[in-house]
Image 1 (tube, one colour):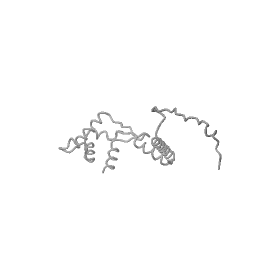
Image 2 (cartoon, rainbow, N blue to C red):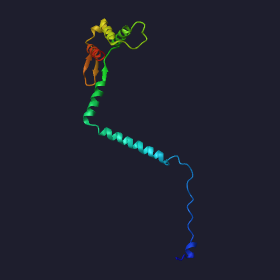
Image 3 (cartoon, one colour):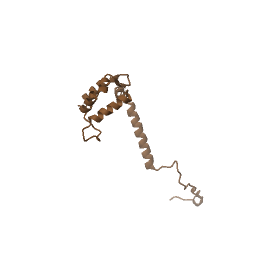
Image 4 (cartoon, one colour):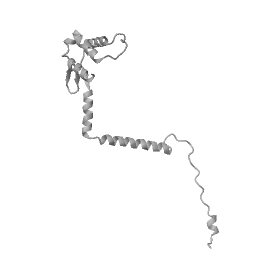
Length: 148
């Protein structure tokens, strides 16, 4: 049997702190799910950054080459553009003038048949970023080869 002193029982326990903030704070208080989502998004961002850093040098070079191939400067005067538009309009099928699609062979034939454009087949019409120029004839031959 243990003895309990009455004095120990009579010692006053300090009251609990009842001063707490009951107002809603616009910043700094987020619930658990929002914190989890923010952490997840931050981790995903870090993973993407690491994945892009880990890309091998050959794949980066390949990407750069693709961008360079797509980057070109068009060298055409307004008169030549107008003649190309006229050839495009001529190549449309009768009764389907409102359609924007034409047959590639028909368009190339109309361009070659036009006397103004025929004289300018050797004129440079596009230049790549690395300085390679392409004349109208080579461009048409390339288009014909690609869109058979």
